[in-house]
Amino acid sequence: MQFGKRIRELRKAKCLTLRDLSQRVGVGFTYLSKIENEKLEEGHQASEQLIHKLAVELDGDEDELLLLAEKVPEPIRRRVMERPDVFHAIAKLDDKRLDRIMQDLAPKRRAKSS
Image (tube, rainbow, N blue to C red; front, side, top):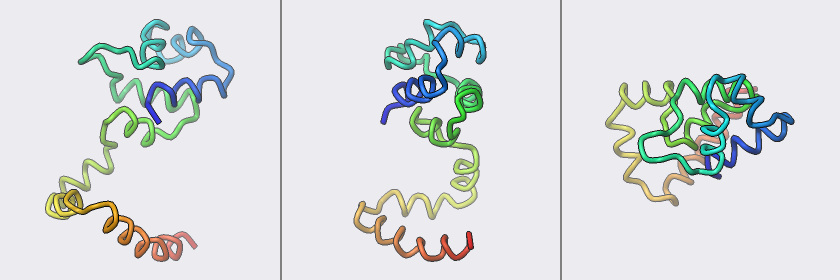
């Protein structure tokens, strides 16, 4: 999914117009329209601050929106900086190996949440 399409989906689910949402987050409605239609010019992408406001107003998952906007959420960024060696190794893995790692982690994640 693309960032703009997800914003539109969330906005429509809340029955908000572009003008309504633009007033709530403090940007022009034409700018929001460009975001939703993936028509922003290079260098004019939504800021992390705007993405945070959109997530709050639209009851969206901020991390999901950040990732769709090709920005790294702060908790992930911090962890990468703490263990760059691990993330460098992970980046080299193919999807098959990553899937196996995720399967190995799944029972542990379920056990922790119980």
